[in-house]
Image (cartoon, rainbow over all chains, first blue to last red; front, top):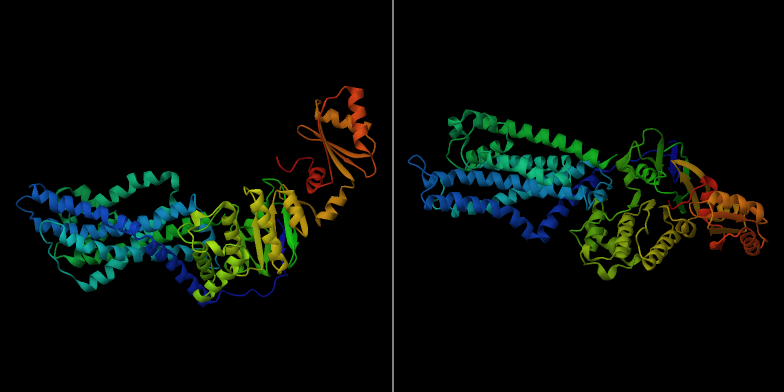
Length: 279
Length: 294
């Protein structure tokens, strides 16, 4: 391979103006939010169904039929535990379904991503825009699910909102889950989607302290230890700290670990993204 | 790729012609920043695509081989968002979208969702999208592959109109007719190497033949080639193809009577005889000994 030239010979290379990059970045976000706006049904379905069923079965049906609580757990406690858990699940699901799955499709059969990575931006910015759009949807989803988790259970959960925690933790959790979506969406292809769900998503969700507080795992130390490598644990425990008076992992652990997971997943996700885009 | 050295002039339609696997897509991938070359350099509009891919992309419009339209958006939204990805303000992107929709005759479906488009319409929309940001070079990668004849004609007309308006086009194709009809100059490449580069007319003249005759008969092609080369007057070259023989014959030689005489003398059953003007395919066969559509 020697030289391929089109048009005039090399001149002084120009630089990308920052204003253009900003406009393009906003447009990438706007594209995802436009699709969300045009197809609200998709968002509602992936946002509501799963948490609604959890709070309905575990927070309403189980207490009503006398299952799931003993002397030491009241219906209120169950509802309180589930409140934080549902916020975590819905954030996780937005990350996977608003970022991961679309990427798998766009890299796979639709190849829509190809046009976006031809825009005059560093390719990583396309991925970052996807992550930010996913995080925004994650935040929106928590707002939608919050009233459900409050109203559906047979008893009202204990609410104790720590605004400073909520307003910092929710965006951080959304960003982490969205970065997880980027990682899953770029590390796996369409053929392995089923495996991603069965092998990764289900344990992340069920063993992420969404249905019980981490402290109650004292009884099974190995599960308690294992839960610490699950990033969703920190999302659940974080929401527990943010909106309930229940016991939770210390925030001194939750924040740094969430930041660490976000950094790691974003870094790996961007790495895979570039490799998929540039041969 | 192996020592390919090309230069495309402003305002021309440059055809890159070669069989599948010749290295056309890799070349385009390098020029459009999707493939990083292991060695060598490339410039588009004076910008080094390897060193500054993001900057170079401002000057590149790409119509890829497969449909990469955004299926979640309408026809117009595809264009408007594309313009915005290239740094246009929304109002300007909307105005420009209306202009290009007129150009590719899709204004009437502007608000339709992409999945509702026919193959030809989708292809035209991809061209519209590629010219939204007024690229210095428009890359068309097999633009008519899989299109029906009418859509193909419509697409060729659009390419001619764009070029008449000053658009530089790099056309990648394995379709010699398309390369012949649209290109100002054609580069024929195979195995990543440049075999010939000239205007279609000059390339066809280079084979030095008045007519090209394809003969199929009940005989082994290599033997038939040797036989016809000796027996038919004016034959400059006889190439054995898979199921036939390709003769290039000088002007002013009557081929048909000679063929009939050979057939009668040697009891050959002729199955097909086609007499044509030389085409770019003839040029390719002369250069490589192979057919283009393998």
